[in-house]
Structures are given as C-alpha cells and as structure tokens.
Length: 291
Length: 267
Image (cartoon, rainbow over all chains, first blue to last red):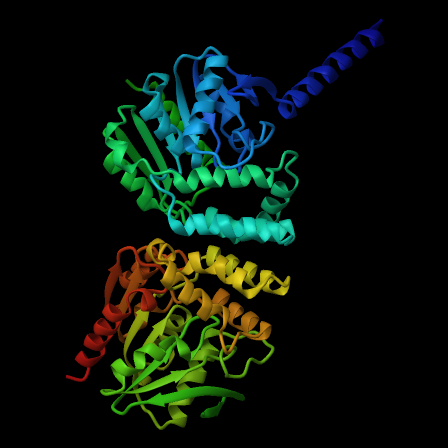
C-alpha cells in the first residue's frame, strides 16, 4: 500500500512535469486573420501582450514572462513568419503585423491591454497607438526606433544573402552578434559560442520567407511624421551602445511622442530582453501600475 | 617605389611634397592609398610620409603576432631611415593606436597628432566583427559580399543610403590592389586585441586633435570621449551623422581641421 501510493505520487509528479514541459514547447493555436497563430496565456491580472522582435519568437521573453505573470495575464505569441505561427509569402508590413495582433486580441476577447514590444515589436506598438488607440493601455518599447537606419537594413540584407549562399549557419549567426550584444557580453568566447549554439538549436527556426517578409515590413516602417498624434503613454528602454537601432533613434521617439519617457541604459546594446531582463520587469511593472 | 628595411621587414613608404614632416598612418587592413586624395591638399606645405603598416599593403606581413608597440617602432625606424627627427602625425583607427604609442614611448619624435576615429581600447564588438569577416573570407564567401557586410559597420546611415557613394566605396574595397594576406590580418588583429592605452594616456604630452563620427559603430564616440577626458592636451570634434570613416565621409572638413591643428604647432 505504501509503495502503491508512492508510485501514484511519482506518476502524478511525472505527468505534471511532462505537462509543464509540453506546454512550453507546444503552444496553443488559434485561427486569426486567416492564419494559424500560436500563443500562450499565463498568469492573472490585467492583460499584457509581449510582442517579439524581428526573427524572434515568444521565447525571447523567457527571462521576463515568468516574473510578469505574477502581476499580469501575460499573452505570448509568435508573429506571422516566426516560430509556430503560419508563414505567408513576403512582403509583410508593420500594419499587417499590428492587424494580426488586434485580431488575436479579438479572438482572445481582450478589449484592451498593456503592450511590451521588443525592437520590431516597438514599431508595432507605434502603429497600434495610431490605428487602434482604444486597444492599448500603455506601451513599453524595448530597444525601439522610429526608423531603422540604413546600416541596420543593410546588415539584415547581407545576412539573408549569406544564408542564401549556403554559408554555414553558425558563421552567419556569429556575424550578427556584434550588432546586437554588449561589449561585456561579447567579452567571453564561451558565451559567444553558447549564443550561436542556442540559435542553431532553435526547434522552430525562421524560414527564409518569414525573414524576408518581416524585413520588408521593417524597411518601409516610418511613422515619424505621425508620432505627435500618439496619445498612448509610452515608456522607451534603450541601450546606449545599441549599434543596430542606435540610441539616437530612441531619443527621436522620446522627442516626438507627446506622452513618452526614455530610460537609457549605459553599456548595453540591442538585446535587452536577454541582457537586462530585471530592468525591463521592474520598469514595466512600475510604469503599468502607476497612475 | 621605396621600401625601408626596418625591424627585419620591408616597410613600404612614399614621400610627397616638401616642408614640415607629416606622417600618415592608416587603419586595420588598409594601407597608404587611404590618403591618396589628401596628397594635393598637403604636399605644398608638408613633407608627407605615407606608409603601409606591417601586415598590410606592400609591406612585409611576417607570420607572427604583431603589437602596436612593434608598429610604433617600425614607424619611428622609418623616421630614422629618412633622417627625420620629429614629425606630426595624421592617423585613422588602428593608426591612432600607433600614434598614441609613439607619443608615449618616443615623445621626442612627435610634435602633434590628428587622430581620426580614435580609441583607447577597441570594443569587443569590433574585434568579433573582424574575426567573423576573416572567417567569411576563409569560407570562400566572395569579397563583394564580405564588403557588403563590412560597409554598414564602417559608414554612416546617410553614406550607405547614397547609391553612388556606396557603390564607389564598395568597388574600391572589393578591388583593393593590395588585399591583406591572412597572416597580415591575424598579426594586426592580435595587435589590436592587446592594445589598451588607458594606463598611459595621462602621461602623453603631445597635443592631439580628436576627430570622431557620432554614428561610428566600430570605435563609438564614447571611445574618443574617453581619450579626450584622459589626455592632457586634446581637442575633440564630433561630426553628427558620420561613421567610422570620418576621413572619407567628411574629407574636406577633416583636411581643414588637420591643417589648422598641425600648422599651429610651428607658429
């Protein structure tokens, strides 16, 4: 009897672990805007939607969402062309990705929510602030930009060309790192190798079509002239040593949006969800919970 | 064309014009041709000395680790060879490291320095960028495509968005008559990786003009600001919307500022 109950406990524990594990790799699916969206909902409270950047999927928030779900209902999802969401033929636009997100909110019966967007996600928040102001409470823009500089676009173009030529993926991925990680992060060769390995072992790597589709969206994105119309309160968090979306792009946003505040982080680059998760959690909670 | 036998290598150099000696040092992997368009602006007043650092251009590229000290010694020995006691220096990027080293180790040989895109220590991002470029070349990626990955790292957004300027520079870089050998690349890379002038910057007496692009990704503005803060005698001029290749993007302004700076020293 003693052994049997212990076995039951073991089995229960085993299934619990398996379920937790499976829910991590198998996201929920929902039909939205004509495509299958993968998403996840966790935690209780007011909704906050975590919007990934270019090429990322929801796991870019892995160091952030587990903490936010103590305060919010956290919605994670993959963009069109990323992760487990459908890839449609390129090109996409930021407006299309914003429409996708609003349709996802409709499908999940979320009328209005906070939004936390990284890089390209910050562009989507600007679009939502203009086109769907009634759907966003406040926005946190991490590593944001009003326009992606031509240098960054050229970097992304040449990366696509290297992949197309069949250059070994680990080398192509390594060429991206100096643009997006801080000098401290890049001081350790083992960490560089680990970062490349993690990207290589992504179970849901982006397809070339998804990459091109999202890149086209970024190339055309420029709402600079309309930023003055965004009424949504926005918090910008930017690395002062960001080389991909340099700090001046965040300063331009702060200058032009009527209701914006910028926090500049010294010695940090673009990959703030990886390098500064604690700051993002703290500032997001403080900003969203303030009056 | 002349070579000087210094430090057991053949150092390529050119002399243009007559007057006060002014040495031009180029950056990582580049050579004296960096300064060809500067010749007509300086040769009437200066004895211009253009040279290829070891590991680049037509100078020897011995298969060994180089150091900035070694390249400073090469340069000073070239001055010996030319019977020049003292000169002023114009340098970009890695060349600015060599000038800092000369000012520290051979203070009697330097009058003034104009340092373009300078740094006390090259950031890790730049070192990784160099390593990946070498790996791409070693993997057989065509030079044109490697150049395409390097240009946005070196030039500003305005420059790369300008089709003619971009294409002219891309062609020039892809058709370099003296492409760097892998030995030269590795040697110069190690020299840069180990360079750190922060311990001796406050001891440098020479007067430096620091010229930096505000959008430099390779040696960002904070590097030039660090130098300016720790040097005894320096002036910093930062160019908005300019990248690492300040001497290309703002050539006319850079020439005027250098002339003003080095001529002051003899008045």
